[in-house]
Length: 463
Image (cartoon, rainbow, N blue to C red):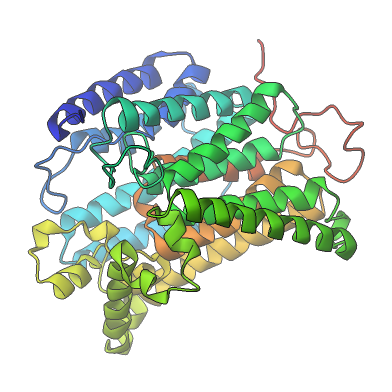
């Protein structure tokens, strides 16, 4: 018998405050683990209205806990920040988002959005320092994975999946949306990020291999379609590296590439046959049927998003030039949903209405905000490419492998509104891993792979 939403709410509340207490009080390695687990717990009261009220648990998770953890890592000193291009661009985006609240119809939601942007900045600093101080390693990542899967088992099977269940028949594991106390659209990307961290590591422990297998199974059970695509990019990148398809400079050995492509094709058709026979009603099966049944794309969440995209593009095309440049204000995207459904303003979450961050940036911040965001993406991609194929850092290759997934998430979801959720923490975990390691700690991936004993994920200092 499934638990009621009210019972789940109190369970979430206890879990959240227990993990928050761990972040504040436990030793730093354990605090970081609690932070990663807390990303899988969302405390939402059944009566909560996003546009007119503030969830104090969400405020604590987004603002207070990251700042406290950052101060603990820096011994309560202000961290030294390298004011290079990405830092300057992100701060500029924060400032512009704060200013554009003035002409937004959703003032409170605009303030929340600015807090999300600040949280991304603070959490990046937290993970950057943690990797540098060797407080994060493969053991931490594996512990976070198994802890998250345990929470998902409790929510899905022990409590009867009252949050994300869509099927009643026994055995409908995929369509039941396997996830912890936050949606599969958060849990799936987190699993893809963990998969990237574990694949691009030299440590060959049995627990690591078992964790990779568990990660893949959990990805299937979440039934998050875009997360499965993210994981596919990571797996292809891993195959390309460890089978020697890629060589120094990013050149491709086409003979090996064709062989791998043939194997991948056979595996895909086998996977397709299994899904079609055993999980006919699953969301993954719907994804695989898009080519033969295009009308599937018009159903459910994706159909709703197509309506939102169409209305957003129509509105943008009708705007005057000045509004195209400066946008209609932070969080003003909520107006799109109200125009489509004629719902009241209190019935939408303006920061999670337009499921495309590029469209959302143009709609709310105009060409100014869109240019800042695209500039950040291009800079990150170029730097990771250079660190992967010029400096040959394995850590950078892990981050580069998740970049297609990040780009996809920006196209179909609202990751900017979830820095402290599992998705945001996963992306930050991989990106800081790829960017922060120095030449001394990040090993060469093409020279002496078998001879080098330098770990891709540094062990924590013992002292």
